[in-house]
Figure (cartoon, rainbow, N blue to C red):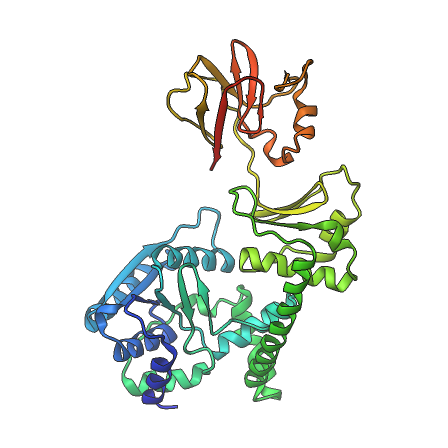
Length: 422
């Protein structure tokens, strides 16, 4: 492949838009070639390079200066972001930090171009194979996908690194070598330097074969996704908009499906709502926990930054609930909204009074409107079907020492409140 052919391919891949085109620019071979090619295809004022300074290597600041110099030569804007790893650096932490940076700069309709190549694709497929990934993981890195408010494109994903190096040398393109790429304590580096060369010594076309398998898997996944979407409709799937619920479905209807369909359904449920399937997921274990549990139980399954909970025959996907620090009782006159740890409380009906606001601590009683006798808050919360994950997080409003409202869910007087959760 020649440089002119690469330029033609990239030009054909880029949709017609006047939005910014961001290029992840580490200064290495692949991102340097990609950046030069994009600048030869597009007007330079539309191209913005993003460099993430990990600060791990002693040469990190020198690499940043190299990237700044290249951006000046190309007459494009360069954004530099310094990354921090208080809990120590890992491949996963590094990837997540870079994605967070890229996400923060994406505008509506913008493009993000990354320089992953065919060798990266083969390494990813093998890495995921050894971690027990399913079909979606073994399908590898997508050449294009939605990303935040725009589109992520990998124009070099089908080209071997050796071809890219030839082109870069022929064009006189400079790049830097990251010494950490040789550190075989990182899993991907071990695959790159140890495993793949060994495999290729027996099967020279191994990378092409791995890419072909990944391509076929992506085609099969499209059919599986269509079937899984039909299953979601059959189990009353709801994509929630509430801040505390990401999505939910009828777990009893899930339990009526054959086991393989249950597993497929759960993975699709997570992918539709999260855009990925958490590596920590053990679908069979999670499903048995929810399907076989007693109707009145409230099982919990943690998935990193999210969690699965069962409540009243539905399975809910939620942001992981952090423990709230104890909050002291707060005096409030109701005239202006009250900011609390979990949200904002406002009086929307009734006269402002001297209220006191606090959270559940145990032993509370109240008498909802229309009741003759008071009952324990615990029983009332269950009766009103207040979700378990909200019961300790919803504010209790007192007047004259009497509990008169539970957020915007239960009222004992004519006063009405609005509780907007964060």
